[in-house]
Image (cartoon, rainbow, N blue to C red; front, side, top):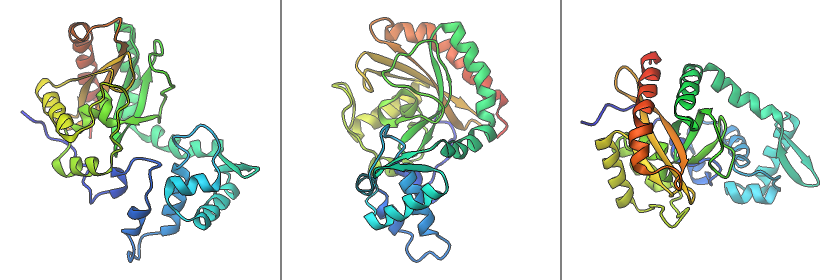
Length: 283
C-alpha cells in the first residue's frame, strides 16, 4: 500500500524542480508581470547558487554561462554580493566567503530533524560499523542533513548541506518513489539524467520501475550507479501521519558487502533507526 506523502507541488515552488546551479533564466522569466516577485533578488540568489557545485573561483563569464543571465546582470550581482561580504574577488576570479555559511546555518539550527536524528544515526553507525546519512529531497537533488561517518567510501566529501543527484542515489530514488505524479513530471522535465557509470539508469521507464519496486519493498538498493564499486541502501523516515519526510542511507564497497548481506545485516537496524526518528517528529 502506498503511504501518504508530503507533496512538493510544482505550484508551491517552481524553483524546487530545478537543480541548483543549472540555468534558471526561463524560470525567472515565468514570473514576469508578478508585482510581488523581486527579480533582482532572484538573480542574486541564482548567481550565488552558481558556486555551489564548483570548488574553484569563477569568472563573470563562467557564472553567466552557468546561470544564462546576461554578463551585465551577473556583474551587478557579484558586485553587490562582494560588498555584502558573500563573495571575494581577485584578478577577475570570484569565490564564496565564509559569510554564506550564515544562510545555511539558520536552516540547520532551526530544523529539529537534524538535532533529533544525529544521536540516532551515531548509534546506528556504531552498531553496524558503517557510515550512515540522512537526506531530504530538494528539487532534483538530495540534500544531506545528517552524517555519521565511520570511513569514507565515496570519492568526495559529503557533509551537511552537500548535494547529489536524486536519480542515481539510494536516498534520492527512495524519496522520489513517494512523490505525487505532478512532482515526478517536474523532476523528469528538469533533471540532468546522464550516466555516471555503466550501470546508471537514466530513462524514465527504468526509473519509474525502480520507484514502483521501492514502494513494494519499502527500501532501495542502488548498485554502482553513482560511482563504480559503490553500493548503497536506503529506508524511509516517516512522520506519525505516515508522510515520508527523509531517508536514511548506508553506502558500502560492493566488493566487501553483497546485496544479500545488506538486506540481512543492515536493513533491520536501519529500519529501527528510521522508526525511532519518526517517533520523535511532531510534524
